[in-house]
Length: 369
Image 1: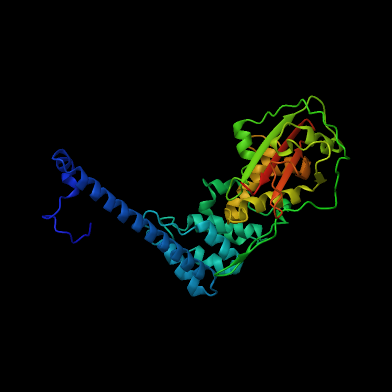
Image 2 (image 1 turned 60 degrees about the vertical axis):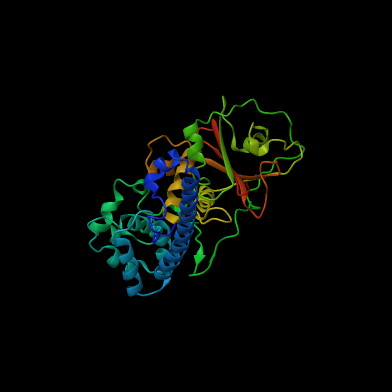
């Protein structure tokens, strides 16, 4: 069906009901097939344009100089058609990686009455915080700070916490990117239980609610990880940190199911900031074949997971969550149980013993479906 078709030689779509009633169902179906083909061709062309647009935006974000930044912001401030996505969280990450903060403050503080720069601004704000930039100068800029209220990212601390000092970032150019190799269990802090381990299963029962489960897995569910699970166990008596390594393999969790008495189960105690960096990298950079949700939203997802793992109360502020995180005892473990795939440093388990030592929360993640 071409736009130049003569409507006198073929029926129009709005006469389909009449044609079908007169025995012309085949003509109706032929027209439907032709429209389907045109829709598929248009969708493919849209995908091509989206890929080209993403490349051009990346070029402008990475190319140094005031002019390239000005032209990039022009794209954001013009009216966008439906379905057009300039990926502000990704662009903010690129700008923070490739440009100096003072060079960004002026252009991003320009008048923007329709708020089309808002998402880019707040994402960039948190990208800069993670990179150790003193953002007090940004907070003095009214047009910048108005986006710090009523936004999901507004909950986050406005200065970099000491939990966030081991943050890793990807290294990107116009046509390529690189990042850290993945999660590895350290040799220091190892507390592996002796083998053969006791095969008696623990009587503890998973008590994670749906909400709590979703909060714990917030980081790996952000983008690109193959699978993740969470469990929470409440104990009648206090559990000493030294007892956690032997207890974990006996708990009713898929990530240790079928492990047996001698299967590999390696575990280490780790500081809270090292655990935070693992969770942050999971969310911000995604799985091996994905790009994650980048710095700003990766930061939010990491804090959510850490809050739920450490048993911070619902509605707690970032400062209250940090206090719970620091009072929690953290473990990082690996296992040869079937649930894990142990490919290229992309599987890990995290266990958190709450400050009162009566609660053990576990996050397990694998980058293989």
